[in-house]
Amino acid sequence: MNPHKVVCPCRKVTKGDIAQAVAQGARSYKEVKALTKAGSSCGKCKAKVKKLIKKLRSADLETGAS
Figure (tube, rainbow, N blue to C red):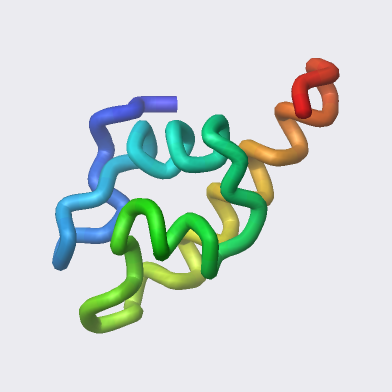
């Protein structure tokens, strides 16, 4: 995963920003949005953000992280 790839162009939120939010305990789109502002402008990236959260959370579960 390229942590520098922009997921939300309106707010310039990257995959790394979302990964950091998940690592800090964000478990839902709403929680990630509150921490990163991803999806808070036009909302076109909402599906991408949700997909990335799901991927990151499943990876955490596989590795035994919280």
